[in-house]
Length: 406
Image 1: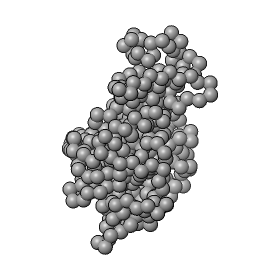
Image 2: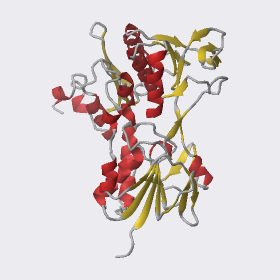
Image 3: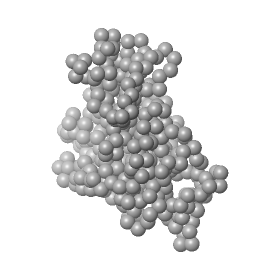
Image 4: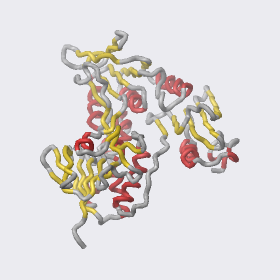
């Protein structure tokens, strides 16, 4: 038996380490594995940063793999290192501190970077993103010393940041360019219900506003936000939650094909067959996914090929959205807006705060938007994903899985 092949993983986040876990289950002894992580932590569950912000969880609670796990599997974990160079000819990666690691197979899982609005003052003290544990710690620290927070972005992450800061006693305004909250995840009616629930918790919404500049106080810290119309709003803390961009810097620098994300095939290979890529840094059939379910589906397929089984194919994902705010239940999936050749079944109960909309095309469920009662979300998601014929179920669909005997 010759020396083991070397697998180097760039990125110690959820997609990269999930791929390693899947690989260890299939072929535990195939590779010597080295993992580079830019953060000082072991692998943690980024999805649970919101409950850490509200104080419902601690960092310890959200660690997925502790140091003992890496040691047990003989994985060399190099933290606080940024990989800056891939030499594809000699098959070596190099980091900012000069560390080198040779590879036979390379897995890029570099994730994404928060998009920072290109406005004056975006680099002031007190302006943060909501992306990693460092950001959360800065937000918690600010909440103990300051009063006014402004969150830019009315998407899932922005609303989670806003409710977390409000739970810590700050007065929070949410600034959103669109006219409705979660306009990519909810229809108008569900969005209005959500806004009503969040306003009842003390949040203020400034919709249809464009941030023009972030203003500094005498101490050099952020003091206010100015909109395009000249209006200003006080801010001691500004959280940017306006989306993410795939982190493709490393891939581009070593000549891999990049088009919004690192372009991969259905086997999660880049244009260099020795180099695989998974997660938020990837562009697959023109789509970059910023959610965890598709990342896990990609991880399974990449692991299958790294394990030399060679039979998995990733064909894209149907995505769903949930908001991680305690006491607020919403779910949407597929084509929930409806449109030509579709029919919608809607149930609304304003008193109970429940709204459900199912979108059907032909004999298939193609979309769902649920607010207030999301118990059947997973079932609807399966029906949408599997493209199941719902002809016989049509009358029971709204009543849910138990009524349909699903």
